[in-house]
Image 1: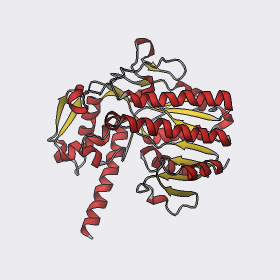
Image 2: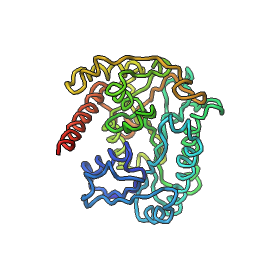
Image 3: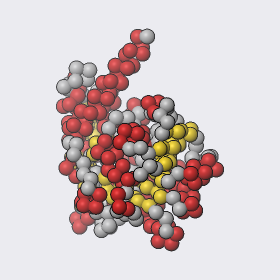
Image 4: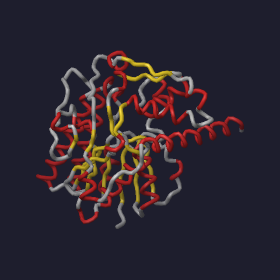
Length: 351
């Protein structure tokens, strides 16, 4: 079935890979919206893709009309980096909740389907009974109010609940997905990593190449379940396709519990893989791991959960999807991309 999909935040990590997946694997049309379009040059001449560069806070009329003309909204514009929602909690709330609420209200007005990006962080602090995070069973226990990192989780959780309310009272068609630590090329920019505001794989690769040390917050003991972005996109496209309407009104975790490693283990794996690349080996052989207290790295308002493991049984049983890529392969795919980027930069500098 042909669809027209509006994706806000299309220039970001998930958005750009989702656009690529849709263009390669479907006949759907995409209308993109974001502040920038630098990650989308490959698709500039694709007849199934149109792009609007703009600010979600200022383009209310355009967004309403775009929602009216599309079949599905995927509102990916948001704050998803701890360094930012610790430093700018109000901005995080305004974008992740208030602006998304306006978009959802517009979808309800025109009866358009919403596929909403929640977050694994809504599960909060896992208890012994909810160590495996299940969409329809796990309790959602957040940290203290003074720890501002939780405003992101709280904003997303509130949107989840509002979507269910709109579904109940206004018959809004929706699906919620919760990404668990998606990784891949350009997860964040090196400019962010330079000021210690990038996430996991981007920060570590940058540190190996340019600082000679990887800072492990709290010693890197925290465990996460990492998933290759390509696997995640396949899962998201399955949700969008919505075969037999099975995804309607449901929440789905998109993660890979088989890639359950500590942050320290991930850092060690990245270093080991970088040693096998001639382009990175010299720096990788010299890099040091440094334990850093969380309060020193992120500030006093930081809080963390020590473990995060998704159940993906619901996606597997209802929609027939599961991830297959190992963490080591995901790291290698990402490093391959950086090698190609270095070659491009080298060619351009020699022109």
